[in-house]
Length: 343
Ligand code: SAM
Ligand code: DTB
Ligand code: SF4
Picture 1 (cartoon, rainbow, N blue to C red):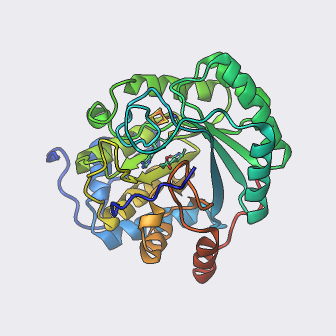
Picture 2 (cartoon, rainbow, N blue to C red; picture 1 turned 90 degrees about the vertical axis):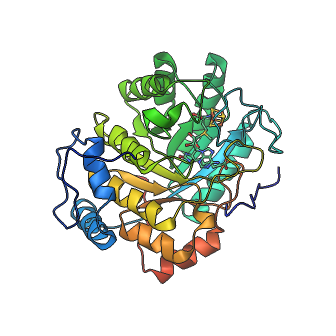
């Protein structure tokens, strides 16, 4: 399958709190972030916001290391859902053809290569609405295999039922990725085949099974600033908040409904990362999709704002990601420590 390389470079007014224009930004206990409080963070003068995020980051992550996570699409395309950003939805003409679930040898080889390149986490993605029990049985074998290589395991397979989450946990799954994607108020503009509550229910099943939660969203889908604040507030108020928070910048893929979305202002993307760091101090905040469209300087600002994980490897699921050599050069140039152990 060729790596898709899209050509696209790729508020409401809040009256309750006074506008914040200095370092006197709102503070809140974990689990108590209002949308207004997050909006005030996003509206801080840029340097004040970054200073605050970096202060929180150093307090909670004294080692300051960067996590490298590699993605593999183990079951590509043909998905019955209609997520408006997604090149794998069957109803969008994106040039992605449907493939069967990969076999264990192919997955083992990809995970070993990712480990050899320095990744400590391996995330397997499948373009399912919801896996069947027989899919879970096959995924369990893949998870055991990757776990056996000494890597952290993550999977993103769509909606899960409780007994399926338990089976994945027993197979050795460390993290389950399931994103809220955006604020509840904007969600129905993007997806209509499943609800926000469906997503929350899956997150709840994952949490109850004892699997760590990887949950984030996408910036650049035409959402208003208030929707970015709403997404961050939703994430921060999950009890507990996710251990991993992937923040994607939309990769605008031709053929998807969001193909013509205007690109995000890179400084606004940095602001979202900073607000995630402040509201979820102990989470791994991951720069996920969209790094290929960012320059080194923007990525460095994201690291300053508290991003401490990246997707590493020259492919995301079906679209491209920076080359491994380029990422290693950037991390070296910035003098950044890389996490070497999966525990
Ligand atoms: N099918 C599963 C599901 O949706 O739950 C798992 C795979 S899905 C591709 C995982 C996440 O990738 C989505 O929830 C979305 O946040 C992100 N994503 C997908 N396509 C994207 C794109 N074009 N740009 C940015 N993020 C994207
Ligand atoms: C996440 O938040 N982003 C990743 C991962 N979780 C599964 C997926 C990004 C997909 C980008 C478009 C593509 O390659 O399909
Ligand atoms: Fe299917 Fe996941 Fe893509 Fe939605 S994001 S269309 S569920 S693969």
